[in-house]
Image 1 (tube, helix red, strand yellow):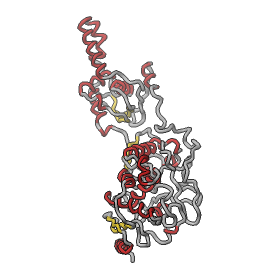
Image 2: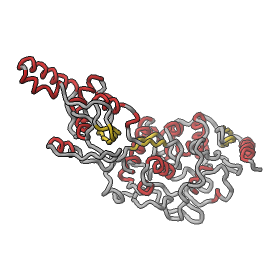
Image 3: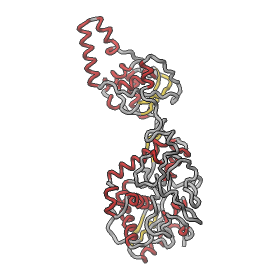
Image 4: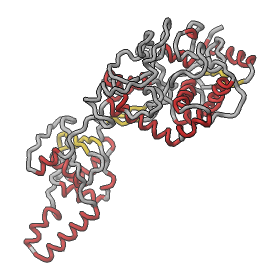
Length: 459
């Protein structure tokens, strides 16, 4: 709440105290009446719900998800993005084809064959079998077994640079084949032997790796296991960010075009059936972005992470316990997250929301008004509270039509497990230290509001 007659909540602190929103690059401007708030998007589906604007009734464009399957559907495969043709390079290698691997880092990505190789136990039995053959047939057997017992290998740490891709589920033999094709190691067998000698075959992980050419197999194994060799960008999404803010962060830190992120066809994201857009469903976490990740890949991973969290808290099953739909639970959680405070305050904020709804009182939350305006500030004026938007909980009773931020698991839990109490007001009297006070008396609310005014330096 600000210093006005805002009975329900306190001002919305920034998503993270150490990352205040930049005045130079504010969130998207509020939409004109009847238009979605992210005006730059070109795809289909209600990607970011309409946030309203002064001077006109908002349209229903952000209320229902479009299901026409257009947008990027023809260009970007669902949940996984454009992938290399599995096995194509492997087939060329097996056929004796030549591969031109560029020297520059990241210039060449070598896909692995889709078919899995032999297991470690099977490979060990084969080697033992060949060793027995050598004893049995003498020199002739040694010639046959030599590639297995004494495979070709380079010396030293190698030179130059090449990026090699390890696909999920690859065996040590498949990784060795890719490294051989890229000129990193002399033979797949030398790499297999090195992983077995070091007992690290089960530690090989998928991804893109920056390697050198002409490496000894043991050195190649060590380099693959070193975290610094992985070519990946990490993007951390904190709790309480709005969808537009999340997309801007992914674009800035992950190197993906913002216009592509905004124009994703939502039918490709795996959103829950009750979702009306991505707002509320981009789960806060740290995400790894591979060099070949598409915008759809990244956003779909966030949605999938939400679905995992929702399953863990049994969101859909437990929503009726608080007399809400699953979407309404996410909406309450998004308000709880946006209002800030400490973790222990979350269930109390949820209780204030439910208590006011139970009496038919308007929620009168500054956070919903600011969302309608695509703004972030600690000061909300009387004029702000009159903005015409379905997200303005001063003018409209009940919950807004959808989430106003992307909540984390603690906020979801608070929405499903509100604290016991008779509070009808709360005020974040010290936003810097996230001190929030709750009361069931309007006189105390007025006093708390004055504390906030003093903090803000107002009368």
